[in-house]
Every structure is written in structure tokens, then in C-alpha cells.
Length: 585
Image (cartoon, rainbow, N blue to C red; front, side, top):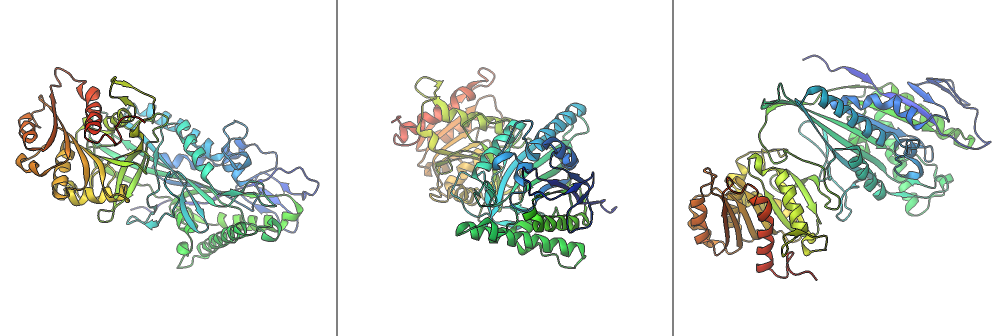
């Protein structure tokens, strides 16, 4: 195998614009900077104080392109507090700007990424598909936190994967299909990020922020082919908290603790760079959460750009020189770019057909960390503190996330009495919807036989991870093989759910179902020879509380869309009047 190409870390320097007579006579050339008490220093590009946001982005945007081809990229900003890092990465005043003049590197990268995806998709004439997923985490006081989570703030575990990557366990991933969708995610995360005012910076970042875009590309030889090549790229966009002179920032109490932790983390980052430059046998990546997250970016397999932000003020000269020396050290490091490629054959798996989310439903993707079955990929919606509705997909294309998306929308908005959608608040909004990729399907690793051979143990594990307080689902919803597994799980673990709703279940020995006391909604298609309606009719006789319906797709292809959610809400309302579908208060 040929050796992966080596690419040096690209280093750019930006001098912050200041309106002060105390500014040092900093001289900038295209790739050199001269500051007092130092010899000229050479970098890939140096930006003077009047450089625009667009000019800075133009110099770093080449790092975005490799992610489309299955490579990792990182762009990160470094410098003392108040030197303009967050302004360069996001926008002014420590927040996200979307104006053409103030927009920072991260939103510009996003806009550029989607323009390149559009070009590539059009040029491939349907033989290439892309999906982008976003996550946003911060490193605060030495721990990683999810900036997109709606649950109680708690530290996330950072783990090394079998493939040698670094993974942030349980971080929310949101499928984003447009620049606007990414900006919404950025806005939410930026609002949750730890910032504070100090004597040196009115909007001082008190954490290191890492915004991650995973770009998955599937290439086919032709439109009809089931074989594909999958390339998974990743873009890390990092805004490091600034190094801080505590004697000048006047940090006290919590601010003091934050400053000490920020400086300690940056010192550990410096030690990693030093070890890489000196080709030491041991690189101390694991000494901090920050260096573990940046492992691929520093001496690893990513294309990396460092933007060093410096101040021209006389009082900042010491910090400016320190930042420039750090940047020069980084420029001496080379990474080996490695393409992440897989080959496979397509299955009609549950995540086919993902689409952008309507406002207000807060649908997103994540990985559930189960106790005994590893990480399970899940599409979730609604209130994580609400009662759990767990959907177990079948394997056919009709059981894709398009069907799940429609079901969730209807369960949240349908007015059962009028068959029309309603904007009035209902108790159904206290539900937490989770649709999983079973092991071996979609993005969940593992054995495909798990859901067939031990459905009770597996689904109980998932329920405990999704609803750790109650360890019970309000309703299991299954289709096809997922329906059969839901039935079997209920027999093996009777307390796993209060309700069951199934469509076209495949099952043997329906007489077993007389042990199921929960209300069960069953729907069969008379035209579906693979799921005989005769089995459903027998099963309904054995169930203690059945709600049985059948239809013919050839006569009424729209029956499921019109009726499934409605019948389920009616069952909930009848059997649990105080529950999510009960009368509105």
C-alpha cells in the first residue's frame, strides 16, 4: 500500500484591528510578520488589521474540500484572550454573525461546503449522494459537554474507537441538509457556550468549542446499481479559548478557575506539538480532553489549518510573541492524510429518505450508549424527559424514516376528533420519539441476528438507555420484522412497554399472545402475501386487548397515512385517558 501523502499544517496569522495609539509598529507582508524584539517570522499567510472576513476565509477554504472526498480536515483559531479568535470563527461580540461583512469562517465554510455538494451531485447525475451531520461540543474546565443537548448538562465520555479514531459518546448529531439548517444548529450551540466578561475581554470564551461536520458520500457506478463506495469525511472547526494573563484579566472565583484550566489545557497542547516536532516516541495526547479531540489534527491524518490571532498592543507583546512561536512550531508539523473509504451493497435500511425537519419538532440523530449492546444509532424527536415511544423498523423501503417522520408529525399534531391537524397544545408533546437502527443495520454496528435471537434483552437495553428513569416505553411501534421482534420482546419482558402498535407482523404460534395484557394496535395489508392476513386474524383472537384493522393497498394505498396515527391516538385515549392522548386540559 502506498504511503499516505504528507501535508504540513498550514498556518495563517491575523492581526486584530485596534483603535489605539498604544499599538506596536507591527509590520506585515504577504507571508511575514515583524514585531518588536523578534526577528521576522514566516508563515503561509499574514493578514493585516484591515483584512476582511472574506479574505481570511479565502485563505483557509481549501481545507473544506478534502472532506468531500473522505478525508478529515481541521481549522482552528489560537491566540490570547481578546485577540479576535471567536470573531474570526463565528462573528462579532462572541456570537454568530450571518451578515456578509461580519460572517466568520464557520458559517462561510458551511456555505462553501453545500455549494460544492450541489456541484458534485449535479455533475454525477444521480450516482452520488451526500449526507451531512453536525455536532457541537465544548471543553469546559477539562470536560466535554454537548452544546446541542436538551437534557441536563453532564460531562460526555471521550473514547478511542477500534479504528483509531476519537469518539465523543452520546453527543447529539443533527442531520443538516442546508446552510440554514447548520446556522440554526450553530446558533443554538453558541447560545449554550460558556462565556463571561473579564477586564481583558467583554465576551471572553471560557471554553474550547468544537463544531463537527461529518460528510458521508455514496458513489455508485450507475443509478440502478446496489453496489456503492462510501466515503466519510469530517470537518472540525475549532475556536480555542484564549490564553489569559490572570494578573491583567482580574479573574476571580469561578473566572479564576476557568482561566487556570484554559491555560493548563493550552500548555498541554503546546507539549503535544513539542513532542511531535521532536519526533518523540510518546505523544501525550491523552493528557487532556482537548488534545485527545485534536489528535487527528496534530500529527495525525487530517488536513489542518491554524489561524493564529495576535494583538498589536504594546501591553500584549509578550502574549503575541508566545502565540507566534507556537504557530511557528505548528507549521513544522506534517500530517498524513488518509482517506476513509468503505465498499458495500445497499440495503433498504431505516435511514433512507431522511429529509429536513419542520420547525418545532426538534428531530435529530444521536447514538444511544446501551449497557450490553454498544452504541445504537437513533433518530429522535420531542422531549427527552417525556414518555418513550420506541420505533423498531423493518427492513423494507416502505418502513424508512420517511414513514417515521410522518408518524411523529401526525402524533404531535393530529386532532383525533376532527381528523385535521391542530396547533393546540396536546399531551402528546410530552412524548419522546426514538427510532433505532438495529445492530448490523444502517449505522449500528453488530450482528443482524441480535434483534431476532434476543429481542427482549436488546430492546430492554435500548429502553433503559433512552428512558433511564422509568426504564419502560409508553409504546413500542414495530413494522414487519420489527413488529415480530416487538411482540417477542413483550413476551420475554412483559413490563417493557404499556402499549404495542404493529404493522404487518411476521409471527409463528400466535397462541402465545394470550400472555400479552397490554392493548395492541394491529394493522395488516390484505395484498401483502409475505405477511399473511390470516395470521393477523388468529393473533387478534388470542390477544387480551386487541385493536385490529386490515386494508387492501390496491384499493386504498393511502390508508396507513390517513389512519395509523389516528387509530393509535384513539387507543391511547381510550385505554389511558390521563395519558398523552387524553383530553386537553
